[in-house]
Amino acid sequence: MPTIHFDGPILTMDQKRSLIHGMSQAASQATGLPMQSITVMLDEHEYSCMGIGGQVLTESPYWDKIKEIKD
Image (tube, rainbow, N blue to C red; front, side, top):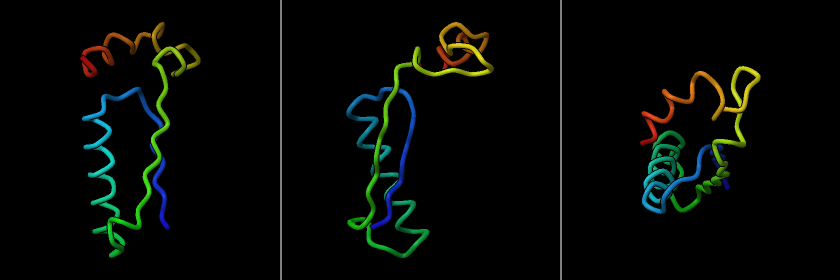
C-alpha cells in the first residue's frame, strides 16, 4: 500500500480533505493503482515549530511573506 507523507502547517478540515483527495488522485493516475490503495499521512506543525535559514520561521525575514500567502 503506497503511503504519501505531507509535513506542513496546520490545516482546516476542508484543506485536509482537498489535499488528501488531490494527492491520492495524482498518485493513482501516476501509478495506475486504485485511489483506495493510497494512504496519505498529514503531519501538521505550528509555524513557530518550523525554521528557515537558522531562525524560527515566525521570527525570520520570510514570515511576512508567508503570512500573506496563508492569510
